[in-house]
Structures are given as structure tokens and as C-alpha cells.
Image: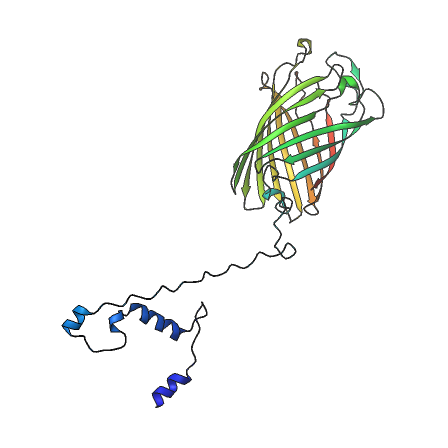
Length: 332
């Protein structure tokens, strides 16, 4: 009595499918028992075993599939991250190309201060060059996860106190460019991209066009320091022979970036450059600056540099001096 009572009073535990452990045990025993064993434990006589017909098994028990929950309504569905949400605030952690669907727009103001005092030109007579202020913009569009297009116009507006200056037609290096970029390597620690474009090299009449191609690599050290190196070649496509500047120019940029805080980046660049037929007479351009990323929508940057800190080269027809740049960029 005590054994039977304790069996009756013990609650049945339900399994995952809603079936009690006791019911599941009975079903398993029923499926494993032969029909001849059900109902009587006495063994049939040989005659009876010969003349008797086995009862057919009963129909299979159909199993009902577990119903899948209905999809959540749009108001309750978890939103997928946008391309801007995937864009890191820290510069050193960013990929070299924009994510697909992300657009970057920027505005820049640049001040050029020529070297003080009279300047000797290639013609051999001295003259004074004046400072300039130029305003421009750029737009980058992420086409895929590895490719992007860019339009860059740094001299939409140019203002100078007097002529001659960088705003004069004969001296106006425009650099308006349309270019494309493709990322070849995109690992966690190393990235590599290639790019090329067509630009307006000089705004004097007639316009002088140029092409440039290059590659840029980015190596990350400990999520704080990023070292970038770029190799660029450019050449004016319709430069007259009388100018004496018909060879392609090469430039090697070494760019050190340090992510000081989540929002603050400081950087320093060193750029040796020269025509490929005067590689023994390179010019050296250093620059440095800092940027502050307010959010995934806005960043401000300031930098300064000197076009050449070495002795003036025979091939260099540019005006020596320093420059200062302030820029803002937006992502949407």
C-alpha cells in the first residue's frame, strides 16, 4: 500500500514537448513490445501458433511539427546597423574605403604663406609673391565594401591680397580631381588599396590636365597606432616641352597616426618627392596636425606643413612657403 500510494502521489514531470516522463516511458515500451506479447503472458501451442494470424500493427502516430513563431512586426523588429553605424569613430580602426552606401562630404579652408622677401624665379628676376586663401570641398561615396569614388575640388574660391599670387591664372595649381579606389587587402592588422584619377593640374588657359596612380598601405599596432605609407606617381598629360617639366613625379608619403583618446587623433607626415629623372634631388615636405571626431556624423581637423625644408632644387619651379588647413567632414 505504501508503495502504490507513493507512486500515485508523485507528480509527473513534463518534458520539453509537453509530455510527462511517465507517458513518454509508456509510449517507448509500447513501441518496443511485439503484438503477440500484449494481453497474455502464456505462450501459445504450436498448432495455435501455426493457425493464428498475426494482428497487424496499428497506424503510425503522426507527429505534429513544432510551429515556428510568427515574425515580429516592423515596429518590434531589431533594426539592422546602418553603414554609418559601422564606421568607427577612431581613425586608426577605420577601413581605408567607405562602407557600401556611406557618403562623406567635406569642406576645407587653406592658407598659403610664401617665403618672406623677394623670390627668384626661373626667369632670373626677383618678385614678391602674396598669400592666398582658398576654399574647397570633396565628396566620397562607398560603392561596395572595397570600392569608392571621390570628387575633390580644393580651389572653388581663391582670395589674395594682391597679384602675383596663387590665385593668378599663370600660377593657379587647381588639383580638381575625380578618382576611384579599390581595397586589395582588408585584414585586421594590415590594409592595402590602389587608386587612380584624372585632375586639372593648372588652371591657366589652356587648362593643363594630369593623371595620378598610387597605392597606400595601413598597418595597425595595438589599436592605438597606425602607420600609413603611400607611393604615388603623377604626370601632366599635355605639358609643353618648353616648360622643362615633362617627366612623371614620384612621391613617397610616410604617415604616423596616434589615437590619443576615443575622439582625438594626432598625426605627422613626411613626404619626399621629385621627378623620376631627378631622384637624386628630392624635396622634402613635412606636415603635422590633429583631428577631433565629435560623433559618427562629424569630424574636424587642422594641419600645417612646409612645401620644402631642403635646399631649393633646380627642377622646382614652385613657390616655397608654408600652408595651414582647416577642414570639416560629415558622414551620412
